[in-house]
Length: 377
Image (cartoon, rainbow, N blue to C red):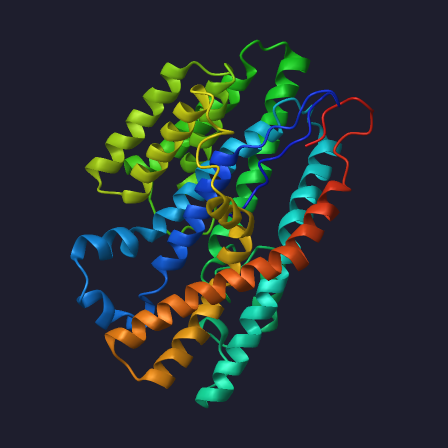
């Protein structure tokens, strides 16, 4: 998911130290690993293993792993709000912001597409089956829309199932930047004192209509609105921390969504609320740069984007080899699971060094402002 967004941002003055939110990176690492575990039971790959484990353990470790996406969405809202906290947004800024986001996200994404296609080709050759990445034949429109994060909009099958969240996240970033720019324009052009409220209160109300059930709620939407509330919870948590939003309003909105999640038994909504409240409370306790500053979690946080993008293909190969060598049993499934996790983490670490770091450097070359002494995101 993550969809990873860097927690490090430049400040308005060179004399100010950079803020690095270790707690957020740790959460990002947990989210990525949880999603990896969530995908382990696909195609009954660990059915024999899970049947021998306590039910509560299977539910918490594997079945609830999809909540890692909820963590990613809330984190993205919090960090993007932090990144744009002092930005003066106009059309030029919006263009450079979009370019910078894409420069950060796209190289690893493109590499993961190549990896997914390569493993799908190898799988088809070894198994003597038709080449069908994502269990569907590859076509030029399908590949082209993937390159522009548009496959969901055109309702074309994903090459890799995790890509749907990336498509939604890109929409989150662009829509939020545009709305924030609109609020600033209303404030400067019409002297609206509460311009931000004029823009974001309707946005928050509209977003809440989906988890409440007044508008159709689809856990796998093709556009951002049904899951917009998760991103906004992160934004509102940040604004509450920075005294841009009264905490009572954040907690009231969170309570509304939590009630909707409980009534409709929507784990994703409940997860988003819990994560947003947790982040705000940790931030208010001034522990963002202290809590969970463990080397292992920080390492997982750094590689989380690559791990999220590539683990499905690596997993498939690990399970195929493990079962092939040891035959199908609870032991072989457990071995294959461990092999898949280790191989996925190792590949993600390599991808972080060779692809993600250069993409971060590339994105930082896109200056968001031209004047010196003004904040750069």
